[in-house]
Image 1 (cartoon, rainbow, N blue to C red):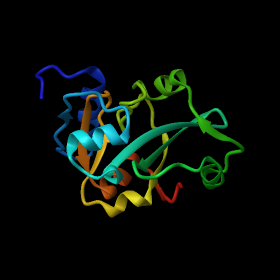
Image 2: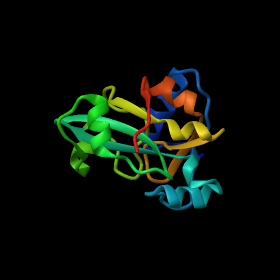
Image 3: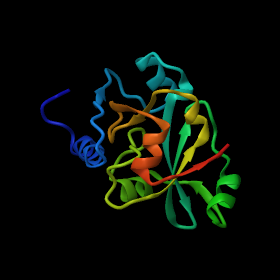
Image 4: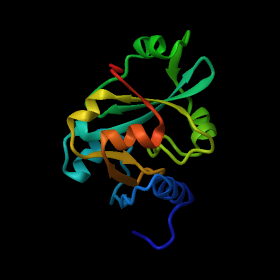
Length: 158
């Protein structure tokens, strides 16, 4: 781990510590903008990658942590959160609400809490990998820890 962390990664590391989690942030050799590229670099199943996807739910941010092997059904998610419409957010909307770029959005470390759903499919994996605020960084965690650190609700999202 480099001595000087990117500010987004430092916020994620601090957020983990604030929850009593001493997970080590891993710096990948290459950017991992997709679950497939992250899984290939980590040598794990694609389903063990927790994609942090920001959606625009009636103009409010919604974070859906979904298994890399799973697609989000936005109509289903809209019903779960009581929104009229849930759609993929623009890069500007994502950065405004998370402070992080698409491809590196972490489940935590945002300027303010973001309503979160956590895909129950992630519970199939002992270790789950999540982005750490930058496209080159990830951290190992568990399904239970994701629920705890995000304050998210368990949901079938696909």
